[in-house]
Image (cartoon, rainbow, N blue to C red; front, side):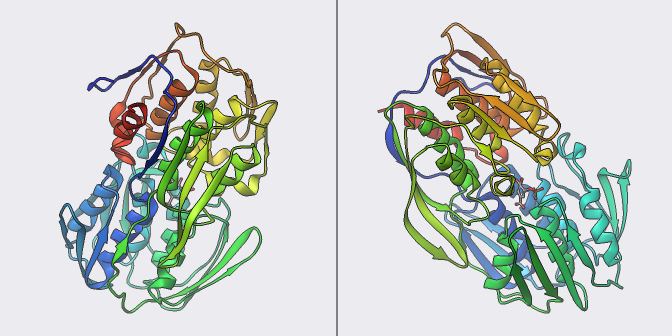
Length: 443
Ligand code: S3P
């Protein structure tokens, strides 16, 4: 493997039998930074994900006047209370992070100063109306580029009104942004939200904030009131199931291999990949299950799959696997039969249009697909194996970290001569991804 921005993979991975640890969960890391910035006093986190998305979140709260100290051992945030942000003329750069960009707007709805929000090329192509619409109902005002995009300007209001909102996309970013705005608003805000990851609600409950949730089959009802005070929160962030996903799939697709991934967050709103792969015949078990501050965690053990079955994926599993579909498609590529994934329009709203990327990567593998703007049919081939001379180049102009990592897993699983560009993209969520791959390949 080289050190340039391009990586060449010319061989499949050797069989392995290992235990690994992947970095801290991205969703929890970003949320911890934001909650800690509002707490009265010093909060400490261990195993905080040190990736660009989280560092951008730390930069953002520093600009809002909050002191942060990062050492090898921990990250310390010196919160100044719920109304402790101090700043003048401010531009926040959310870089590549939809989670930061959308969540922080919820916290800024009462800002007395206008604030600009910018992002990188990828984030500037993503929908921000999905948060500016509900936040406007509270009373904040927005100026968006072309009515939808970054750069945007938010003008907060000191006269916020609680809202009733129906969140229909299953977007945890929208839901969380509304919860943050509700924390600043007199009265009770009521959200009916299509199921999505619930880390924000669980953190609120752990912090004993005035939130009530009612879980129905397809949607959650959340009631939240204004918050006066947030206590400090020390947190040992469990590992990220979305980062683990690449290694779960690599193991499933490799010969005679076995892998244990330690201490992974297995919040049921995130384990869609496990349910889907088990339905496809992959053996995965959770060991040492524990509850930690309202979240669940476990070691994940996975072994090479012998007979992979096609799946007609139930759409209710979509939100729990939303960041994992690209790599799940690789498993479908090796399944016996035709797999079908539907109601997945949200995939094209991610760091790059990922449904389209699924189609492109599988086309490179010689796997037939039929794709619409919200579904993909994958014609699996249990004997999928590329000629070692087959040349494949992946250039991912929006630098989507998950496109890079999925391409690499495809190369290591199916063979061929791959040239994969934009290696730096892994810094968004998983800076030591390649080091773990190298360790797996070395006895
Ligand atoms: C996230 C929610 C998901 C996910 C993203 C992280 C979060 O986005 O894709 O990587 O931490 O809330 P949506 O809420 O837009 O589906």
